Length: 194
Image (cartoon, rainbow, N blue to C red; front, side):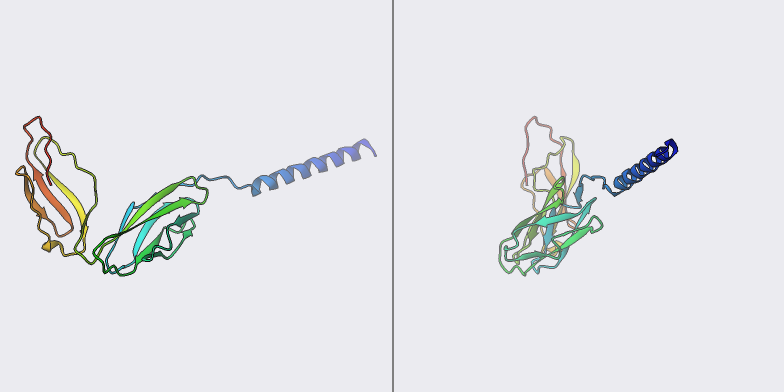
C-alpha cells in the first residue's frame, strides 16, 4: 500500500469517526431537572361533588398519587406531559355533616419536584372555610383587614359578630370576604379576638 493510499484510508477513517461522534452527540438527550408549580395547595369541592380543576405547570411529565380507595373522590388523570396543565377532581355527594379531606401528591417523573394539594369537600351542613387557617398578626395602628372564605351557604345569610370591642365594622362581602377594622392597640399587651 502506498503512502497516498494509507493517507486516504486514514482520512476516511477519521471522517467516519467524526460522523459517528456527531451522530451520537445528537441522539443524547440533555437531562432536564423537573420543576412543578401548583396554582393552589388547597381545592374546595361542593357538597354535590362538582368537578374542580387543579391547575399546575410542570416542565416534564408528572404524576399524582392519592388513596384511590377513599370512597368519595376521584380524578380524571393520574399524570400528564409537560403540556398537560392540570387535572379534574370530583367527589360523590356528601350528605353528611362532616367535611371530607384527601391529600394528593403531585410529582415530576424524575422525583425532583413534589407538591401536595389538599382536597376539601364541603358537607351538606353549613360550612365556612377560610383561605388562611393561621392566626393573623395585626398591626398596632388602626387598619382594615380582609380574609377570603368559601361557604356552601349564600354569603348574604352569613352574619359575623366580633368577640372583642376593638374589632369594628365587621361585614361579609358578596364575593366571600370577611372584612373588619382593628382599632389601634395603645397598650403593650397582645390582644386576641375572633
